[in-house]
Length: 112
DNA sequence: GTAATGACCTTGG
DNA sequence: ACCAAGGCCATTA
Image 1 (tube, rainbow, N blue to C red):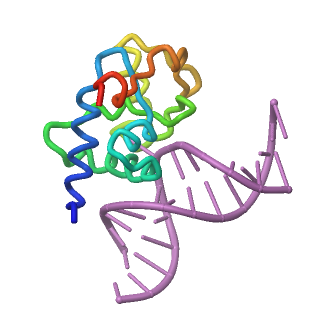
Image 2 (image 1 turned 30 degrees about the horizontal axis):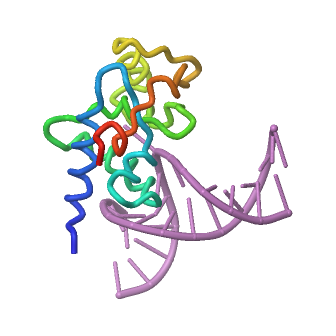
């Protein structure tokens, strides 16, 4: 019986492993953890990323559409795209440009 | 303990 | 092709 914190930690680990200038989606992380249907829980884990230590670059995680759905959950709604732009990612209308190009699949890149 | 919610994804019409 | 609804998992009230 896995602990709930374990799942969170797994998500945090994966998110922290995301290279700079790259992004991934909740479903990809969930799939990497072995629960493709737990995509919602991944997002929920991000919600808890605030209290996690060290903090997790949740701004590198977006939905399947590459849209910054959780930008409102940050300290400030525009903080997410600010961080993304600093990483070199272009954001337009709360949406990531060339998302497919910068997409980072853990199950593939980490060769699991 | 039960019920409702959510930073989602998949499938049906 | 586009629009709509359901479902799964974990957490919180």
